[in-house]
Amino acid sequence: MTAAKSTASSIGRPPFGPTGRPDVVRPGGPPTPSASRLPSLTGLRFVAAFVVFGFHLIVVQFVDGGGAGTAMQWIFGQGAVGVSFFFLLSGFVLTWSARGDDTARRFWQRRFAKIYPNHVVTWVAAFVVALVTGVGVTALIAIPNLFLVQAWFPDPRIHYGMNTVAWSLACEVFFYALFPLLRRLLVRLTPRSLWPAAAAALFTVWAVPLVAQTLPEEHQYWAIWLFPVARLPEFVAGMVLARIVREGRWPAVGVGPATAFAVVSYVASRWLPGDVRIVAGTAVSFAILIAAAAAADVDGRPTPWRSPRMVWLGEISYAFYLVHQLVLRLVSKVMGAAHTVVVEIGLALAAFLLALLASWLLYRAVEVPAMRALRPRRRARHRPARE
Image (cartoon, rainbow, N blue to C red; front, side, top):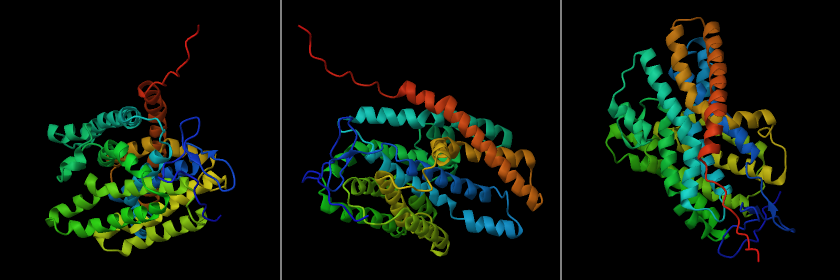
């Protein structure tokens, strides 16, 4: 596939179809309504959640001995960078699915309906897990975590308190607050300026570790990994890439080569300096994979990430991300330590299946009903008065 020139307006505003969703402009023909969900990206979302799960297997030392432990380090030692994939993907998908006549209030209401009910349930579950595992929780820890502002605090007792992984939601809330403004700025970019804008956003991701060196050493990790402002360039890069694909300006980079590049950079990043390894080392390859997978979906080309099973896993991946570490803590507490490698592998598999079951229940019992109940109501179409 060659890069297609866009027929969008000269000021770079994306065309919208009769449904209010963006159209993809195809060369030599009229705009074709885009798939709003991009199934390959849904499937890839679970892959990112799974490598984060594997990373936390290492953190809680489920499999830490012999050849199995070494293999775990090679496969999942860099798994925390799955969060970077989420941030890039979030910017891409929200921009792709943005409605032409949307308002900031309606957008924020949809995002609240999506993330907050699951968060509250797992926040309560974290209290229970803390009681079982004997971890103390104070109001100073619990309240910032409940309101998703914990990532703004450099104190690890706060930003990693309660349900540890929820710190990334605090970053997402910051992104959502800025999204209406960022989108207005994005649609003003001319098509020719999109690639320079994407390059600038990804360059900023690499610049963050350098800027962080000016801070006290004890705050550098927080400033690179958790500080919402520092993670914003990933989200912005995803937004710009969505317009690049929408405008038909994505080059002939297929999903296969993009996936291979992402895997190689993921493994190779273990040899990068620590400040670069935890975010910047994989940002470019993840951005390429997201855009390539989306372009394949637009063109109807098959990918390994869009099968019904992968899409189903992707649908429950947000719930899986929120519950998996709580499950790992419980299993580790109940089963104890000092097991043979075979038992450790069995416990890891059991914890994965238990987390998968819990995430499906959370998705079906909380996430889906809450989104239906809390999302904005459809606007009534204007009907001319009858005579």
